[in-house]
Amino acid sequence: MNRIMYIIIIVAFLDTFIQLPIITPYAIELDASYILAGAIVAVYSFTNMIGNIIGGHWIDKFGRKKMLFTGMVAVSVVLFLYPLSQNGWQLFIARFFHGLAGGVLIPAAFAYIGDHSGGENRGKKMAFTGAGIGIAAIVGPAVGGVLAARASIEAVFLLVAVLFLITSLIVLFFVKESYVATDRGKFNFKEFIPLIKHPMIILSSVSAFGLMISNGTLAFALPLNVELMKLSTETTGMLLSTFGIMALIVFLTPLNFIYDKFSPVHLIATGLGLIGVGMIILSVMATFMSNFIAMVIYGLGFAFIFPSMNKIIADASTKVDRGKAYGVFYAFFSLGVVAGSSVSGVFAETAGLPFLACAIIMFIVIAIIIILNRKAKVTL
Image (cartoon, rainbow, N blue to C red; front, side, top):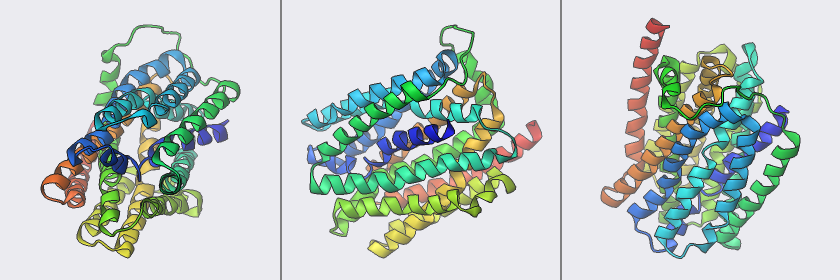
């Protein structure tokens, strides 16, 4: 059953990664300004954040399977709207509803895996989920870039829409429910208060915020870097796939012992530091080789961070509130992408330094994590 969930995770994250090399050029092609293009990248994550929070409640109320299926079908329908966009604002609206529809998917999938994992090997199991994301990170940008260059950007959205329809049928017929609450109460924000006060959930969520600021920066600014080098979207896809390959090497080789041997907090801090270094390289050098090296470093940082954060959330929650815990956690993911792409748009428009701004933010987040970890040791 976990193997099916890993496939679902690949498809769910493919939706994000396949659009990385094309969404900014598509927005500009529809005559959007840099600021509107940044908003178009960001609005998906903003509404995704709302979907994460409300979906987290529904996951615990109605069950993991039902919400996975509903989210898959809804995303598929919205993706068919992308090729119909005639200007930047219409694309903005499509992204708005895309985020709402997809907000429930990832928390439901990780809540399901959290229900079926535990013990000393939880870190390695979360590494396998990271491997699924790594596969999406490798395949998605490459397919998106090549298909956009050789066919059309619209074809990319249609491909993903069909893929989501097929996956929704897999969920319907092959996934068994892992947990359904007997409580059928209405949505209440008070249910989230114990979770947002838990020091380790706060720490992990802040880490997610930092990681996805960097991802949002890449989504917006890396295609612009490639354009400055006078290269095509295929190059953007290849560079973005590089970090997925690097992460996959860590996730699926004996190197994954680190997740059960070392402190997840230390791994997260190290990973954010590596990402900061990668962003500095992207900021100061505009050659293919320097961009390639930066993405290798980024991939290593991502590999340290992602399973460590998810392990913390799984350890800090139970079946009763795991959907809500992952809802809060992935809301910070979405908030990070909103901040990353929005800040990148502003800095690209005004100062031309989106990567440097991201690097500074990474080191600030590391300082916050160190402080939170010290407080968590005192509280727990």
